Amino acid sequence: MKKIATLLLAAGLVFGTTTGASAIDFKVKGEWIMSFDYGQNGRMTGGNGGTGWNNRGAGRASDEFEAVQRLRLRLDAVASESLSGTVHFEIGDTTWGSDRPGVNSSYGGALGADGNSVELKNAYIDWTPSNMDLKIRMGIQGLSLPSFTTGSQVFNHDAAGITLNYRFNDNVSLTGFWVRAYNDNYAGGDNLGHTVNANYLDNFDVAALILPLTFDEVKISPWIMGGIVGPNSGGKYFNSTTGASSGDIRAGMVPVGGALRKDGTPSGKYLNEYGSAFWAGATGDITAWDPFRIAFDVNYGAIAWAEDGRLNRSGWLASLLFTYKLDWAVPGIYGWYSTGDDSDPSNGSERMPTFTTIHTNNGFSSFAFNGQPWIPEGGRDNVLGRTMIGTWGVGARLKDMSFINDLKHTFRVNYIGGTNSPTFARRYLAGNNSGNGRKAIFDNISGPNAYELGMDPLYLTTRDSALEIGLANEYQVYENFKIYFEGSYLAAFIDKSVWKHSQMNGKNDQVRDPWNINLTFIYSF
Image 1 (cartoon, rainbow, N blue to C red):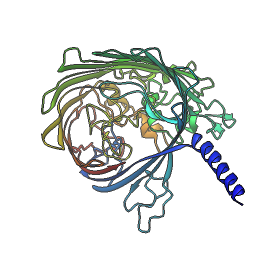
Image 2 (cartoon, one colour):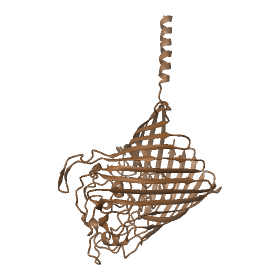
Image 3 (cartoon, helix red, strand yellow):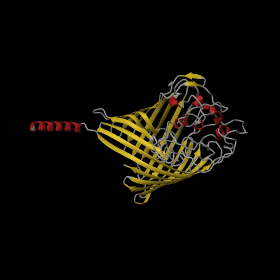
């Protein structure tokens, strides 16, 4: 009996040793967010107008007060330094009191809860081939093009694809990724008089190369990205002026109103070939004159369709930042400029196309553009747009001011102008204008998201401008718990001669300055 017990004990030790050698180390991370907003005029409309200043606002809620929560859970299964897997779940955004499935991801916030609001955010594996300085990530992952100033104004989102990173030495590395944004979503059927099979020309793929160059006092990252765009991609097809819209994609990839003739009516030409998209840029961070810092971004992009040049879009955006580090704050001044549309709708758009930037938290602006760091998809920022395309601006900020331990503040002021043609807006966007007899292009476009065609979401001309003022405060209560409080105001100055008439009912446009205050509680572990 003792021999049997000894053998069993020995076997247990052997199996225990084997199991330990191949054990997986599980790591759990997460974040709870409770966010409360109160504000007005987030859609910058006070009447029945429908100009570029109305009905375009990204403010998600119509209520003045709103409470939203979100939970993110991340599980890492680590086998070794060379192999791991990650799954990232998101519960919410859940708007308190809302029980409308499919609307703003707010299902489950009404009395009784019980909403199906769990989402898969990321799911990927990381692995390294033996004896190589190559890292590979495969699956649904967060991806972004580099930026040292505003955050990427071209691409920053979760996507399914493959990322490769090779480190040549301490100073030079190379990153490449391929993303399949859309495929096999097109339902088929009649489209602009053509019978089209399901899933025909509906894939949208992009690939990029990034070359980070890192030295002691200088960091520079040039990059390029190209793509093929199926005219029926994602089921949010470029081939039609009706139907579902992907919003962020469609707003950034096509001219305002789509492919237009000179009279502002849709060309109605069916696309039967892939479009080609291309972006290139460089971003830099220079600290050679510490405590001075200089950062810059230069971006260029174009999308072209062989069958209909009216749908082409190309342009550029550049930004520059100067900061000086003090003991109690980091003051900075900055500016940016982006090309805008000319007065001819039939030659495409002169604004830089954008892929998708829904996860970019703008470093210059926390209200006018996409800058709320905690619930960016559901917050009340990006009043003017998720990107800075079609605008120019200058600003100043005092970042990370601190006079009390664990409490810091950031104050900013931005003056923002448009770079789009006022003639284009007056003739084709501002509704029935007795001066030229032309109708707004959107009068000829139907569908639930027709107003998003080429808009992101507002349209500033060279005669329009806005002044943004904001103060953000962050208090670190505990190591894993902080409170964020922000107040923002946007004063709008629009040219009444451009926006003389609205698109709806012929009524004069009314504009009320938007403002918002936000209180957010963040528990991270």
